Length: 443
Image (spheres, rainbow, N blue to C red):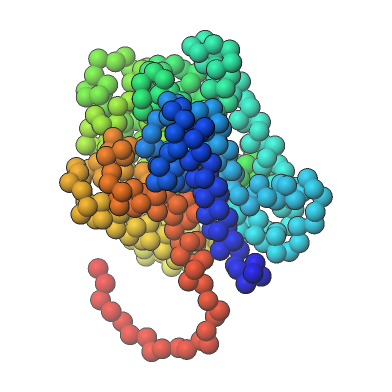
């Protein structure tokens, strides 16, 4: 059976199985505080959201789920963040099993690597650095959480939120201070804010960039073109967007706040919009330009081969460089002294068009089914497609059909819309037939 499946199809099926297992576990009565079985739609929605590291929820994570239910969610987040195939490869490695060419190719596809040599060692390094980053984050977060919640709960909260932040998942347990409040009550806590921003950013730059940093240190000139693009775009988006959020909200949502508090909120919003999903401000009160900026950041997302979603930073960079090259009549786009391949340009255009089409379809369906504010629907759909998890407050008001639309978008956003399409549309190459070329008018 598996011999007839492509690598992409195996990855998609693996995620589907993960979602189904998570749904079944979350439906168990002892997974909820009330001791009652959660409805299949709510369990499915939560399982997809956790497995696809999104963070949109229909029930408050802290007050609805027991410790068992929360641990199930945490395991789904960790597995979905690292990738199911990465986890499977680790088990095979520890069992001293030979991966074989087929499994190596599958692993390379899972982490978006163009090399199949040394994948076992790379997988172990991914696990090691994941544990180091999440462990360091948990250690730092334990200071404010132990202070506020006591030793045992404080340590547990530190671990849960460190994993959730690193995997860009957006799930939180702060509902004990107010359901669905996220981190609004800790908006001025510098440790919480800065640790979250660091974990979100590190998890969102991708495993390939980690390798470049490990091998070349701070010798930026030796970095691959991919790493240079990812780091440059991520830096500009994070700090440039933070400045814009501050400008848009300084006389609105941040009115009366000192500059340090306002900019800290702006920086957190800028980082979390890139697929993390936490919030320290009331998103329903965002001004119109901040609302639009949030949607654009959610559309971009993180980087290829990372825990983040979105169309990816490299995709946006390639598209803009191609646009500027066309305006300057350059025969080929050039970036950091390297020419971009035609295949990369085609793929970038395809990813953006496909994601934009899915977002448009999602907005149309939900708007046709329910009478909801269009900006709120746009925000929700961008959040789902980018696997962000931020909401303007309409998630729990969605009709069953709308919930299924959001579930589909979360899954597509994590697995990769173009990847998923190719998984089921992929066919053997047909005999090449050259048709006559005819010019058409464009623009």
